[in-house]
Picture: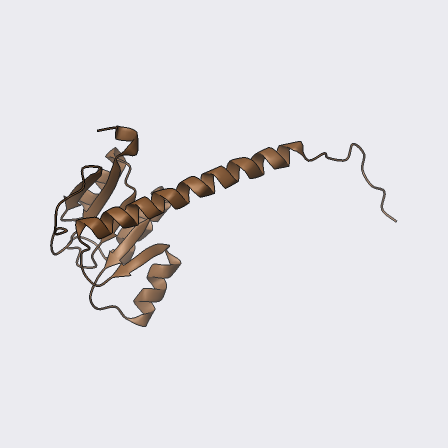
Length: 147
């Protein structure tokens, strides 16, 4: 397996694992606590983090605050069958990419991660083009006098 093309997902306190046959290009790690999740995220890079609100050693919002503080670019999805409007708003404000009613199956997970990776590659290419354009724009060599 080519490690550069390996898609990785972290499942945090999920009630069940994805069902179906796991694609070879997808790596999945599961943890049962906020502490273990943060330790895993220090060791590995994940394309997507699936989070359940039933975390035994921290609140959902505390964990996500720490994740976003350390890795502001981290993509994550919330897996819950009950969610208040207020909690949905909090999740969206923290960059939640999806709110799922149940743990997705392997094919859904593979599709989600591939979509996120494609969007990330497009954004990176756009940023490189924008940076190149900004470098070629001529700056005036003199200050404009005030009237």
